[in-house]
Amino acid sequence: MDLRFTEEDEKFRREVAEWMADNLTGEFAAVKGRGGPGDEHSMFEERRAWERRLAEGGWTCVTWPKEHGGRDLSLMQQVIFFEEYARAGGPGRVGHIGETLLGPTLIAFGTEEQKRRFLPPILNGDELWCQGYSEPNAGSDLANVQTKAVLDGDQWILNGQKVWTSLAQWSDWTFAVCRTDPDGPNHKSLSYLLVPMKQPGVEIRPIVQMTGDSEFSEVFFEDARTDASNIVGEVNAGWKIAMGTLAFERGASTLGQQLHFENELAEIVKIAEDNGAADDPLIRQRIADAWVGLRIMRYNTLRVLSKSIDGNELSREGMITKLYWATWHRDLGKLAMDVLGPAGEIAAGAPYELTKLQRMYLFTRSDTIYAGTNQIQRNIIGERALGLPREPRVK
Image (cartoon, rainbow, N blue to C red; front, side):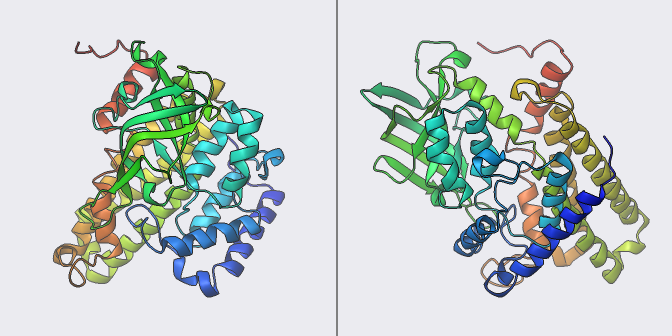
């Protein structure tokens, strides 16, 4: 991939940076840098207002085709947008699940009626989405989901439970993988349904984490309903759709995530210089390793993005992405606490006020668990990328 930016790209970079500087002021000055991982509960309504400001400026769904309201940015312009957004301190996006996961899925697999109904409210920041995949006994083993959906006339009736559902308590809709054939093989008995969250029969129970926050929840369906037309793809063919959604998760927005990582590393370096931790040669070596690891992360992401994705399946190179960044970020959390020393173990105030780096450290404990544990990621690399024999399945 050619990593050089053209004059047109640099002009676009200035456009993004100037818009961000002009708009992250006044009522939105307070949301700068808020709402990232481990902080997603913060200033939610203010960030929802920011989502609508972005929409007014044409800065939501920038990767979507123009026919669906996006900007259809080139890959390099996508890189620029997400990096400049992070560099300016743009807050965590409350609409990112709809924009980066559900929207591209509907564009690729949805009906024209579904695109007309669901894409504009995502584009305008009017409807928020959550992902109904994981269950208590079906996290990394997604094909084992037990939430059932039965067609009753012109509606699907859902019963079951989802868990670790990010932003569920604020979402208007969820895209849920459900079992629609109780007797069929696991991968061939699932359907991909779009389900309204604000209805009788949907109960949301926030899960309190060790950070004291609860940006994800348990979701219980008890005779919840959605229209028969709210199925993406064919009945019992939802596995392909679900895998397509996961492929979109590794898009150019991950480069913005990496710039947030770079900001965290810069803060750690500054503290190390101020408190003398940088005089320790082992700390200096770990800081250098973190810097090198972040550069490797960036170049591999660019390599993945520059390769074509056939049939919305994740490329082989992309299969190492989650394992790599999750492990790197977990180690960065450890580095932050070692640089802080005893101060890292003292809360800023009662009852549970954490500093940014303390919150980051605690949240990185989950990085190697959610979206597929490190162990599952290694299975994916071995079986799908390298073609090794499948791990024996317990019957």
